Amino acid sequence: MKHTAPIVTAITLALSLARAEQIDANAFNSKLTKDAAPLPNAGQIQMSYANVAEKILPSVVTIFSSAPMKAPTADKIPPQLRPFFYRFFGVPDEDFGMDENDEPQAPRRRGQPQPREQEEEEAPQNRGVGSGVIITADGYILTNNHVIEDAKKIEVAVSEGENTKNYTAEIIGADPLTDVALIKIDAKGLKPATIGDSTVLRVGDIVLAAGAPMELPRSITQGIVSALGRSNEGIVRKGRMSGYEDFIQTDASINPGNSGGPLVDGLGRVIGINTAILSKSGMNAGIGFAIPINMAMRIAEDLLDDGSVQRGYLGVQITDVTPQFAKQYKIGDQTGALVTQVGAESPAEKAGIQVEDIIIAISGQKVDGSSRLRLIVSSLKPGSTVPMEILRNGQKMTVNATLEALPEEALAEVGPGRSIPRGGSGKGGANATFELVPGVTVQNLSPALRERHDIPKDLQGVIVTKVDPDSRAAAMGLEDGDVITHINRQLVPSASEARTMAQASEQSVLLRLYRKGDTMLLMIGKQ
Image (cartoon, one colour):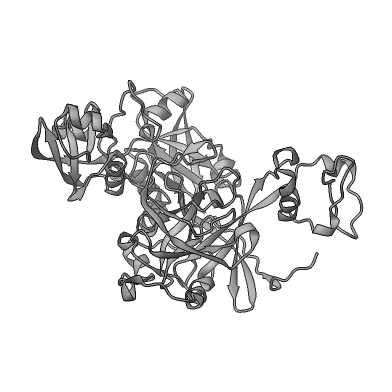
C-alpha cells in the first residue's frame, strides 16, 4: 500500500509515574495566546480561507489511543460502503476479493502469507484515532475525554514542517461529563493555537473544523454556526449520557477522527472543541457539535490542580417552564427553571428556596431554562455565595445561596420520586480523587461508596480508589477499597488533607486501615 503522508519519525518517551510539573491557573493562562476582538467587516464572507488553514493546522495534532477499537462487522455495513470501511481499517482496494455472494472476503496485503488459524481467532486490537489542539508552546493539548478514555498508552503526532514527530502523552486530567480532557507531551517550541471567545459567536458566523477525519491528518472543512446553546441532545458515550451540554452546532463536516480537534472562526481562533455528530449512518450529515472553548478552558484550568473538576451544588430538581406551567402560574415569560423538589439540608433549602419557585437569574446570569441553570451552577466553585432571583407567587425576590461540593451520587440521573442527595462539604468536589503517595489515589467517602463497599456509616477516613500494581504501596499490600482512617497516627478528615498529611513525611507514611471489618497498619515508602 502506498503512503503519501510524510515519513513519521518516532520519538519514544517513557511514561513517567510522576505527574507533570504542577502549575496554577494563572501561570497556565499566561502561556495561552488569546484574541477576543470581534471579526472585521462584521464577519463578511471572503473568497479564501488559506490563511486560516495555515494558522491553525500547525497546532492540530493526531492522537492515537491504545484503547481497543472493534472493527464493524460486514452484516451491519451497507454493501456499497463495505469497501470504504475495509479501507479505513488498513486494506488497499486492490486486495479486495469477492465470494460467491458478492461479499468482500477477508483481505490480506500483498506479500503477506495467509494468517495461521490461531492468528485468525485473535481479536484485532486497532488503535483509536482522534484529534487535539496544542494550546501552549510547552505541550499542553486540549482534546475529548472519549478520545483518550481507557487508553494505556497515548501517542500524539505533531506536524513539524514536512515531517511528523510522535510523542507519548501524559493525561493531566479528564472530565467525562463535559467530554473534555487535558494531556501533555514533553516538547518545547510548539506552535499553540490562539484561543478565541465563544460567547461572541453568532448564528451564521463562518467556522472551520480541523482534525484527522478517517485518519486523514491536517484536514480542514468549512461551514457556519448553525445554532448555539444546544442541550439535551441525548448524546451517549459508552452507555453514559453527556452531563453538561451547551453545544455549538455547525454544518462544517465533522467525521470520526475529528473528535477533539478545534473548531475555529474566520480568523483561525479556536472557539470550540469538536465532540459529536448527529447522524443515523455515523458519518457527517451536516449536524455537528462542538464544546464552546470558554467552557473547555474552564474545565482545563480545573483539571490542572488534581486532575478532577470541582462543581457547585444547589440541591434542587428543576424543569423548564412550559406553556402549561406559564398558564398555571400566570406568567407571560416562559423562561426560568421551575423548582419541583428541594433537597433536605441542601444549599437551596438553607437559602429558603421552595417548591414552585421559578429561578430566573443566578449570579447575575439569566436563566432561560433548566439546562442553563445547571450549567451556571456547575461552573461555580463550592463555597461560592451567589444571589438568585426568583419568582414566588408572581412576586420577584432575591435570595442568597452558598453552594456546596457536588456529591458523587448527584452525578446519576435523578428522576421524579427520587430523593436528592445531601450536599457535600469541603473545598474539593466529593468525587475528586487525590494522589496520596506515588501510585495511590484516594477519595472522600460518600454514601454511595459506603454502600458499595459495605463501610460503616460512622467510620471516618478516605477510601483508596486505585493502587498501581507496580507501586511500593501495592507491594506492601494496600488494596482498592481500603479505608485509610489515620496517617502518621492522626485522623484523616478528607482526601485533600490526606494528601497534605502524606506530603509532610519525607521518607515513609504510616497508614492505619479498615478492610472488611479488620484494622491494620502499613508503612509505605515514598521513594
